[in-house]
Image (cartoon, rainbow, N blue to C red; front, side):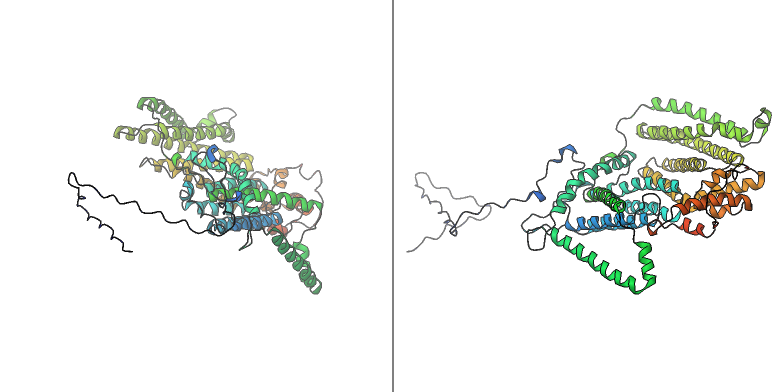
Length: 563
C-alpha cells in the first residue's frame, strides 16, 4: 500500500505558506501513539525505595543553612578508621599523667581523620551519587594543616615534660586548635563559634556514625557483615595470643618485653578501656562529622555593619590615650628611671612597689585589648579623615599599652628576684608577654586597616608561646631561678621545690648536699609510688631517674624547717 511522503519542513527564516481564501485545508491526522511496550507476565515492578540509612534525613532547619551536616551516612572506611583510632586511644592513653600514649593517640586520630576525608564515598549499587560539597568545605584553607600540627605538638608535650600542670594547659589548648582544624574560622566570632560547635558536632555525629556502622556491607550483597568483622577480630586475637605465648616461652628477652608492655587484664582495666574507647569514638566522630561537612562561617568574617559617629568613639578613646600617657610618664620616671621614689617612701622596696601594681596592669592590658577590638569593629573608616583618626588614636593607645606591658614584666622580674619564681608567676608573665605580641600585631594591622589575619595570628602566637614554654622547661627554670636566689641570699623554700616535677631534678643538683637530698628524696618517693609503664613513658621522668637518690621513704619532718 503506497504511503505519502511527509511534508517538507520549511527552512529557517521562511514563513509557512498560508492558504488562499476559500481554499479548503486538508487536515493531517496526528500520528498514532507508539504501542505500549510488551511487559513480561507477573506483577508490576514497584519503585525502588532508598533505604533509611542513606536518607532522606530529617530537615536540618534547626541548624540553618550554615551547618546542614553531611548528606550521607559515614562511609565504611570512615567507621573503620575511627574505630581503630579509638582502640589505639583505649590501649595507649594514661588517664592520670602525660606520656607517649597521648602522642600516639594524637597521631592515630589525625591519620583516621585524614583517611576519612581523603577516601571518597562510594554509594552502593542503585543509589544516587553523593551530593555536592557543603558550603563550608572549601572555607578551611591550608590553615587547617597548621592547626592539626599544633594539636599533635601540644598533645606531644606530655612525652617531653613531666610537669602535669603544663600538660593540662596544652591539653586544653589542643581542644581549641583541634576545633579550628576541623571547623575553620577566621574572625574572632567565627573561631569562638567553631569551638562551641565541636561539642554539638559530637552529639550530632552519634546518629551519623551509628548509621554508618549499621551500613557496613559486603561487596556485591546487601547484607551486613558485622559477624564477619567480629570473626576477623577474634581470629586476629587468637593468632596473636598463641604465637605470642610461643615466642615468649622461646626467648626470655621477648618475654620481658611482653611483660612490660602488656597490662594486667582485670575489671578496672576493662572498664578503663571501655570508657576511653567510648569517649574517643564520640570525640573523633564529632571531628569527622565536622570534617565531612564543616559549617559555613564565611559570613562572620566581615567587618561590623553598624558604625558609630566619629565623635562618639574618638572623644572617649582620646581621653583614654591622655590617661595612658600620664601613667606611662610616671612609669618612665619611677620604675625605669631610678630608685628615687622608692628610697623617698618610708618602708617601700622595689619588690613591694612591683607587687602592688602587677595584677592591676595585667587587667588594664586585657581591657585595652577589648577596647581596641570594639573600636576597630565599630569606628567608621569611609573617609580619609576617619582612617587617619583610627590609625592615630588606636595606634597611640596600642603603643602606650606596650610600655605598660614592659612595666608589668619589669615588676614581675623584680618581684621574682625578691620572693622567688613560682608556676603562677611564670604563667602570668607569659600571658603578659603574649599580650605584648598581640599589641605589636595590632600595630602592624593598623598600617592598612585590614586585619582578617589578626585573630588567627593571635591564637597562633599563644600556641607558640605555650610550646616555647614547654621547650624551655618551666619547672627547670623555676628550680634554677630559686637555686640562684639561694646562692645569693641563703633563702629558699624547700617545701615548694619538693613539689616540682621531675623536670626540675637537673637544676636541683646545684643545691648543697643536705638540702639536695631533702628535696630529691621527696620527688623520688613520688615517682616510685606510681611508676610509669610504656603508655606513660616521659623524657623528663626518664632523664631524672638516674639523678635521683636510691633511698626510699619520705624525708623527715625537720627536713623543710630550715629554709
